[in-house]
Image (cartoon, rainbow, N blue to C red; front, side, top):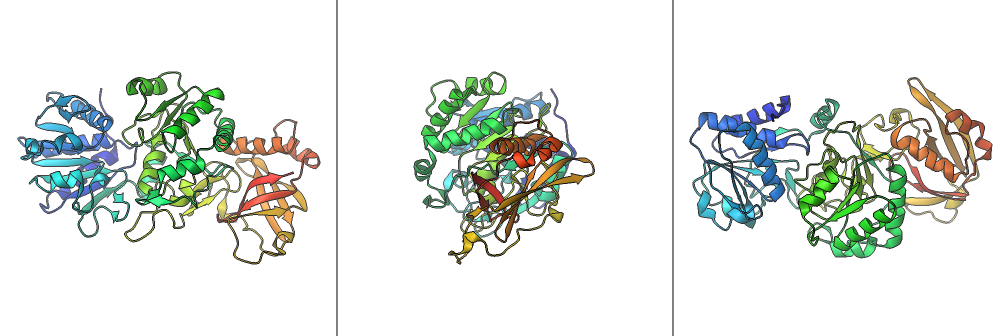
Length: 522
């Protein structure tokens, strides 16, 4: 087996090598999840050993899965060498010229690798910016040259790991996570598009207490682990996800994961759960998902990093977080390309994308700032509720052109006759009438624009009936609630517009740039 060497992997490995010419440089590279980090790691080691053939190299990381992945890649690049593994989880204690080790195993025997010449930290964001923790305890006593790789080169409570006081690493030498580079990788097919959608149900975590820079897990579970909430979320997911083959579900805690799994199985979605208390063999559970009949895998913390399943084409996010690192790592599980996979649908019930931003333009937690409480650079498509970066001019899901979309007409309405204070996130508006207009655009299917007149306020909703993917499914979902029973063609629906139910009230979210309807009463 050979790895395909991609242009950016060679460039990234070269950038690391060039940076090491400065003996004071401790470089890091930022590589999106799914972009082939292990190949970059192997290419860099290959370059190093060409110039330093007798040096000893230690690859340091924190999970058994990542150790196994790194060893697999290195064995392909170095077929004539035995790659050592130093990990209690793998029941191996091997010390070779190239060794991949777990930090928790090596820290117990630090002298074993005291004379390593080069240490590469995989998932380098785990290294504390303070003089504390296992990584710092080990690395601060070694004379080795240092380098690091990660998809998230920042830490909560500090910011970028190569900036500021106390940081061990000191220079970012290659960044594939920037908007420009990430989008290029996606355009060239190296990453699968991730379409983030804000479903009608949104978990409200505004009153959940926080600890250590994130929501308190116990408080999150007490707030959101409710049978009615889970049932509503999964029924909506079942409707929109019926054409998606492999679902990954992120839960808050073990009990929440168990409850989600039970309800998914009751709904006919063959599901398995994976957490620290599961008695079944972990590998068999993962194989059942990636290669077997299991359709949904529900997990707590087990598949955030080091989980390689390109088949994932739908992610259900039921775990709110204020951690930009956790947000990027979880969402990144769906961006690996796979045969016949056009994109990965990201049903964000937790509001993480709106809170923290798109994964290629995430809000980096700066020192002194409250993580996850700023305004994320996103907006919702008024057609299909897809969450897109604020700078995007076109929705990647339905093609809606943001540049030509009119904003909400402001003014008093019957709903505002008492309330005069600050505009809230969501408000119920009373609908006087609904106006239907056909909307045509060259090269795309026709759609229907519904304009709801609520006093002097007008709210627009688009029905992209003949569009594919989420936009088309959402339109049919809306029409079913309007009592429509005819064929799902734009012309047929427009012809029957006078028979459609008109909601008496609509719930409008005013926080996006273009307000959108999240609920309706008839």
